[in-house]
Every structure is written in C-alpha cells, then in structure tokens.
Image (tube, rainbow, N blue to C red; front, side, top):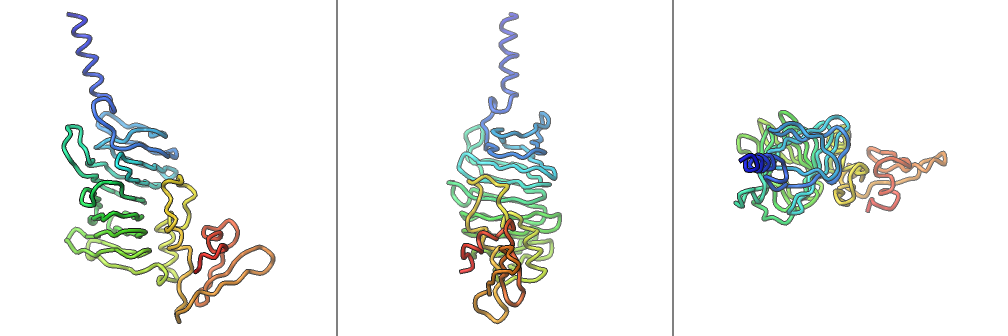
Length: 274
C-alpha cells in the first residue's frame, strides 16, 4: 500500500513539473539578466535554454532581454522593460491545433514568423491587434498605442474599434491607437524630430548588437540608419568629416554625422546609401 501510494504521489509531482506534464512551446536561446516567466506555480528566473510554456507571462526589467525560438521556427525578442503572455501555441498539450497567440502588454518586441500558415499567428495589444502575413517586423506597445516597423511581408494593424491599415512596404511604419489606425510612411521620408523619435522607439532598427545572430535582420539596419531623402529629391549627400576623426556626414537638407562606433557607421561607410 505504501509503495503504491508513493508511486501515485511521485506521478502527481511529475505532472506538476513544467516540461513533463506539458510540452514546451519555445526555448529562450538568449537571456540577459532581469527576466522572469511568471507562472501559476510561481515565478521562474529565465536563463539560457529555459523552456517557455503556454500561459507564461514573460517579464523583463530595465536590463532584461529574452530571445525565444519556437518549435515552428518563429522568433520572438522581448526587449527591456517589456511584458507579454503566451496565450496559445500551434500544438496544444492535448494534441489539438491552436494558434501562436501572444498578448503583448507593454514594451519593445521583434517578431519573425516560422513555418506555420499565416492565419495561425495572432498578436493582441492593449490598443488593438496585429494580423501577421508571413512577416518580419519590430513593434512597440504602449498603454494607448501600438507601433509597427515592417521589414518583410505584411501586417494588418487594427485598433480596438476595428479600424485597420495594412503595413506592407519595406521600412514602412504603422500606428494604431484608441482613436485611429494610420500609416506614417516610409522611413526614408520621415525626417527631423519625427525621425529621431523613431530611432528611439525602434532600437533594434539602429543597433542589433544585443541580439544573437539568428535574431538579427539585415534589412532592418537600412530603415533608420540610412539618412532621409533630401526635400528636393535625389540622393543624400555624403562627405567625410574633417579633423581626421573618420566621421561621415550624410544628408543635405538635414545633415547627420556618423562617427566610428556609432550605429550605422559601418553600413554608411560601406556604401549603404545606394
């Protein structure tokens, strides 16, 4: 009797352990400190190789960063000061089909779709939804606004009132808030303080050094590191700064100077303005 009872208790304990009672949805391949997975069974500090499960609330602090690869090859980056919940996954524990459903609560993210059909991805935010169409993009979630910077494919960006726009051009920016959804335009055509704001809003479009190689997108570095188009048309002007410091000044209407070590410097020096 005691042996039977012990076996039953051991099996019950195993069923409560993540990874034994349920299959992991994804794996945290890259983790910077200050990142946790909040679960009904308690909070778990995430480390490299940690499993991510349906229901996990992934939360990062100011120095936190989590880079997740799902079983279908979908890639998700959770930036600093961010939070999201894995609501569902493509294959549930009971074998039924689900969606890769993410509730992005706040912060900065990168999303690259995997091998699943396009209609099997769903992203919700406090201000709306992001419908994915085989895509690579960065998105930023604030309490009253969701912003998207597209690198590949297309997304259907909607606010909570069902007002939608399709973001489908490379380096195009879309925004949805409680009152409207709109296309802000191609990053080359955004200049001045608006461009400065975009660089701050989408940090991985200017500097991917914190990301593992497999989470980097070559096309992303062109969107905001390339200088804006001159107001009168034509190609942006480029010149080498004086003083022997190796700095490069680009643009004519609104010149920007890039020096060694700055995000985008190597790209511009290598002729990335063409």
